[in-house]
Image (cartoon, rainbow, N blue to C red; front, top):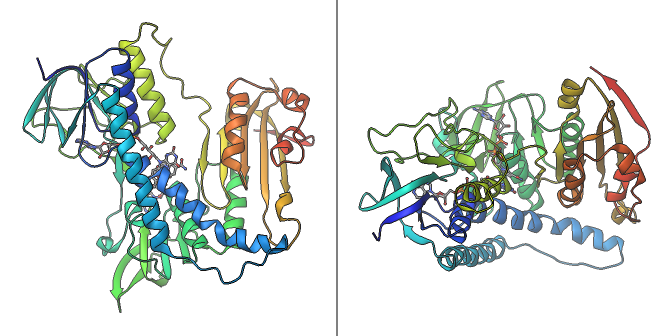
Amino acid sequence: MANDFDLVVIGAGSGGVRAARMAAGHGARVAIIEERFFGGTCVNVGCVPKKLFAYGAGFPDEFRLAADYGYTVDGWSFDWATLRDNKTREIERLNGIYRRLLDNAGVTVFEGHGRIEGAGRVSVDGDIQLNAERILIATGGKPFVPDFPGNDRVRISDDLFYLECLPDTVAVVGGGYIASEFASILNGLGVTVHQLYRRELFLRGFDHDVRTFVAERMGANGVKLHFNTDVAAIEERDGRQALHLVDGGELVVDQVFYATGRVPRLDNLLAEGVELDIADNGAVRVDEGLQTSLDGVYALGDVIDRLQLTPVALAEGTWLAAHWFAENKPQGPLDYRDVPTAVFCHPNIGTVGFTEEEALERFGTVRVYRGSFRPMRYTLGDIQEKTLIKLIVDDASDRVVGLHMAGEEAAEITQGFAVAVRMGATKADFDRTIGIHPTSAEEFVTLRQGETVTL
Ligand SMILES: Cc1cc2nc3c(=O)[nH]c(=O)nc-3n(C[C@H](O)[C@H](O)[C@H](O)COP(=O)(O)OP(=O)(O)OC[C@H]3O[C@@H](n4cnc5c(N)ncnc54)[C@H](O)[C@@H]3O)c2cc1C
Ligand SMILES: NC(=O)c1ccc[n+]([C@@H]2O[C@H](COP(=O)([O-])OP(=O)(O)OC[C@H]3O[C@@H](n4cnc5c(N)ncnc54)[C@H](O)[C@@H]3O)[C@@H](O)[C@H]2O)c1
């Protein structure tokens, strides 16, 4: 039958495309349904355009640095429309590639809204009916904005990528990945940025030293950080946005960006009478095999309550397709240990393994090695760039259980070390490794003075 499939995937984002392509590669009959953009959040309004903007935001520093190396960089200026439109052209190229990847893999592609109508039944735009042995929910997430008077005046991360023009002054609300990245990008592009976070110190979940260091560096780079505050209401004032803060303060800016987390996208996904077990935070509950509470219905990526990261969604898609259709099935469930991650704020953060606080809780006694230095690139002038590195070692086994970096190239460097940490490298292994000189990364293998910390 033309509309009978072994697998129907709803959502052609990072996880959905990967699962569909891999499953088709294993010989399954696969369909995928996408209603908005091929490649999903990461390609269209996430990782990729964000990173391009982060590169763009780095140029003013490069121009200043160039002067220390003898260059005269006179009269440079910045045109937002050029960056925005070049980015959009690249994203459109990537959309085409994602679409072709699916076609070339033999996946049947439907453009429209996917909805689960019942066991083994999915509709496209309520019209076309597909029969599926297995259904995969890969619908991702969407920004969450809290409820308060004037919250219709705020912008979300999607909006940044298509702004008509750059505002002079913005407030970025939130203290996580997106808020910190957006604050750094806008600051780098010359916008006056106020970042507001409701608690004492932003980037909760990251190592405390890293959080303190990044707050200090972002502040030094020009971002105006306001901690222990939140927005009570926003009203329009002379075409600008007046923020009434919970502590009684007021802030007037041109635009307000909210980055206060993302929630699973389940809009009109389930026909009446179809029910899924949903967690309190709105995530689809799945078991070890990524199966939902409904037989034959699975979920992955941002729509479930694991790590909201593209490589995690990709790993889940790869794992599921192999688990279902490959001759050599994966041994056991997907392993989420030691997933490295980065925040592309300025300075970048790279991290893998436990924070000092988590490691202490888990291992009781740890050795902590810290280093902070000025990268060589900046030593010719007076630009005050700094890097922080930190290793956390389980005292009993000597295993490096946490590696953290904040500074230039932190994401790139951490990716390499993540392999060693994942393999269980000890501090003695790090010490035995000869460095590459002169680099920032070599500092990780030359840390000698540790501090023993006990719970
Ligand atoms: C601003 C921003 C920056 C980010 N930066 C990074 C980064 O640097 N590194 C990183 O690892 N992660 C980053 N992320 C997170 C990353 O984008 C997500 O973790 C990843 O995209 C999740 O993939 P997914 O497949 O679960 O969902 P998505 O990529 O969101 O894809 C879901 C797809 O499903 C479609 N869809 C939804 N409902 C339906 C329906 N009913 N019918 C048909 N189609 C539907 C959507 O249109 C979408 O295309 C960032 C996210 C944001 C918002
Ligand atoms: N570089 C990357 O890998 C990258 C970049 C961007 C996003 N992401 C992924 O996307 C996810 C979503 O990003 P995000 O920054 O929106 O979420 P986040 O969870 O990282 O941060 C949300 C922030 O909003 C605050 N917050 C939550 N509710 C609030 C409320 N009611 N009022 C005020 N503040 C509130 C939280 O305290 C937190 O600081 C991230 O968790 C991450 O997994 C990854």
